[in-house]
Amino acid sequence: MRKRRLIVGFICLAVFLAVLCGCSSYRGIYAAYEAAGYEAAEAEPYAEKIASLVGEDYADVSTVHLLVKREEMALILEFHSEDEMNDRIAAREVLKELLNADRICGNCVLLDSTERAAEIFRNSI
Image (cartoon, rainbow, N blue to C red):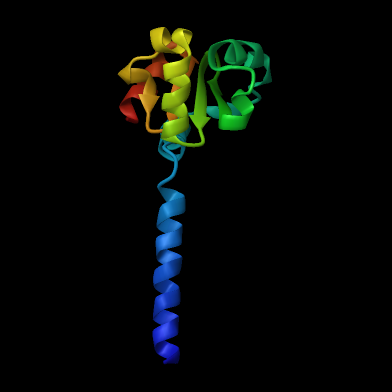
């Protein structure tokens, strides 16, 4: 009986970890940028731009990531879920016009970037 509980416990733990790991595309995107020499930076200077594109409450539904390498940069918005991302895109005309399939990966959106940084995002899809 004790062995059975232990096995069930490990199975539950494995399922829980699999769910946690599969929730966001950002981990793979970040790994691609990190391999190319990019580092995380403070995204605060872009807050006004993000609010104008996504809405004033963007911090409630997403996390902002700024990755930089000398003069190159990528501004990525990681939504808490793909459903939330799709709802925001559908509700904001400005986002509909800005985004295409090359700028969306899972629950992440590439809002702004240099050309080389955009290429890294596309290749991580």
